[in-house]
Image (cartoon, rainbow, N blue to C red; front, side, top):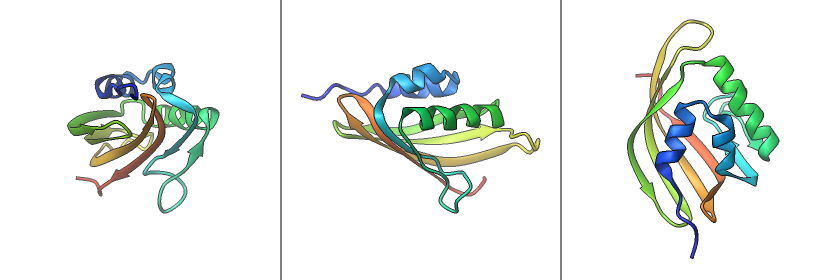
Length: 121
């Protein structure tokens, strides 16, 4: 039987900007595809070092970013969390967007994180 995934902890460490806590939930071969980045679809980070660097960059660029959970589903191999994200990037223009993370799980850890978002509210 697979280990259970703790969605509450997942949301807590992201909102605390706790990079070590975030990375503790990831497998060594994790792939993170955020909804923002240089490509039309966002970006892609593969492996712990690349994911850590991407997460740290996000927190530097949007120091007040936070995710408020709207609903969740947690299964054995996948989890989905729908959220409302708010923050103020370095350009000073605050944003508010709805989106979701689709997580692929292995033994209670994240091996894939794909983020999707709607246009700004």
